[in-house]
Structure formats: structure tokens, C-alpha cells
Length: 151
Image (cartoon, rainbow, N blue to C red; front, side, top):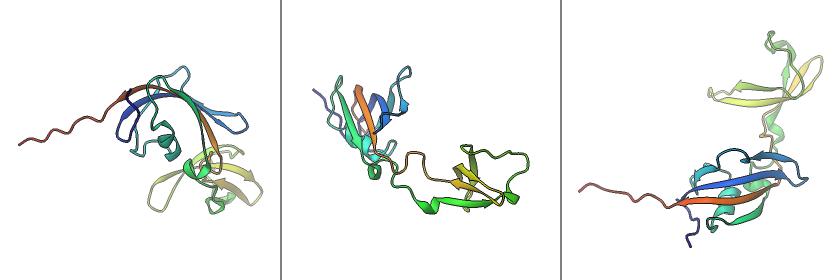
């Protein structure tokens, strides 16, 4: 029976939750997730978790924060002067905004606190610092396409 290996294109149904049981994502009611194993399209622990599975296999994996979205980084939490906040936006705790970095790249941030002087913005991934648990079901494996080189 064919088992998942690096380079395979696979389809997998998943249910992602935190260690307290809170669901953060699921493919239920949707098409299964399709990706190439080892290509960096998913977090490292997910790639490693599907490796060796066969079609029809089901399993539960735990992914430590370091193999998921990494640890929370306090330097990713910034105080932004409220006087520089766009006047057409009313800030609220929990609101997600897009900031532009020095290189022009968009960076999602979440407002975590507001006071008279400043707004606290957190640019950490919402799942940073968290261990993730996934229930997996492998639906399909397509081996890597052979490379054809013209003579």
C-alpha cells in the first residue's frame, strides 16, 4: 500500500484544535486540503504528521509550537500612537488591521489594548506559542509527476 512521502501531492481532511479542545480550523463541509508534502505549503509538524500515512488512514497528531507557528515574540507587540491612527477607522480591541512594513510587505496585526495615548498592536500569528492538535484522514495520494526531459 502506497504511503505518503516527500514530494507526493495529497488530499487530507483535518480538524485542528488547541489542547483545550477549542477548534481553530477544519475541512468539515469543504474539500479536503490538497498540498505537496515537504514543499513548505503547510507547517512543518503537519508535513511530518502525514508522512507514512496510507489512503484511508486516520490519526491524531500533536504539534509543538516550534513546529507550528513558533513561539510568541514580544517584539512583535508594538505601541502605536493614537494620534497617528487613521481618523476614518474606529479602533476596537480584537480588530484585525493590515500594516505595511519597511519593505512594503503587508503585515496583519490585532488590536489588543487601547488607551488615551496609544493602541497596542500584536503582529504575532494568532496561533503562535500554542501546541496544535490535528485529527487527520488521508483521502488521496498522487505520486510526484515524472520529469520529462527533451533530448
